Length: 317
Image (tube, rainbow, N blue to C red; front, top):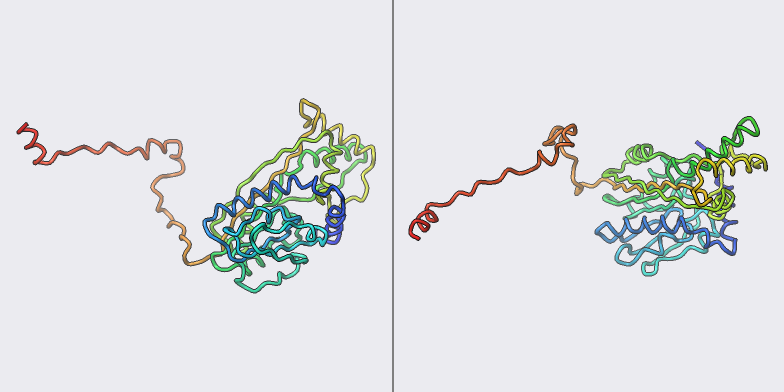
């Protein structure tokens, strides 16, 4: 399935990198990169070789230290972003300019860790990329990623759709499709990962109006790159969308919120050392008894039995 124009996305990132104030728009990627690096830190092992797919401007690498990773490889679609990418302050860092939709230039079972932060939502063949990641990971290797979820920018999506329907009699998709948490779990299972952990962080950012939000999305290179995108937005539709946005979702202080749902996922390549799942029917309690769990697990007091010697000593006293 070819949903996104990868050449357009590369141009968008190059243009964003060429801006003098490019760092102003890093706030969301920097926060996601920090949270992803924190999850790497939670794994109690050092990864000798790690790969960061779609590294952006190094928002993950700047939080990677030598006690976490030995050597870090960074790959990025945009040459502009890659040139500006921060390296790890301690670990050896290797930069590679490549498109992650092409076969990854690494051997089977080569990497100990693969990470990706806010990049996978622009990949056309996501199942194929996950299979490639599984291929290059060593057994018991770890995959940690963050990507936008389905509720991201729902306020902007609804406002644009209502405005265009009212002004033009129909609407075009202006927000690219995002993956749901259920689909992520299915994709990771199909790719061969196990011991999955998927959680959701919701970040709400307030902007003066809808137009500042759209400007920042362009500065992040997160503007629409779907093949079915509409080239131009009519002025009347934009003004109507801004009004609907403010009236439907606006804050009391006059600003408007924008929701970013970020899915964090962790998967492991199978290995014999990993704990197997419990056998079916081995549970001690039923899920329907969860509300009574404290009472079920409460231990009965153990009676104290005195020995004959203790009885004899007490009688003597």
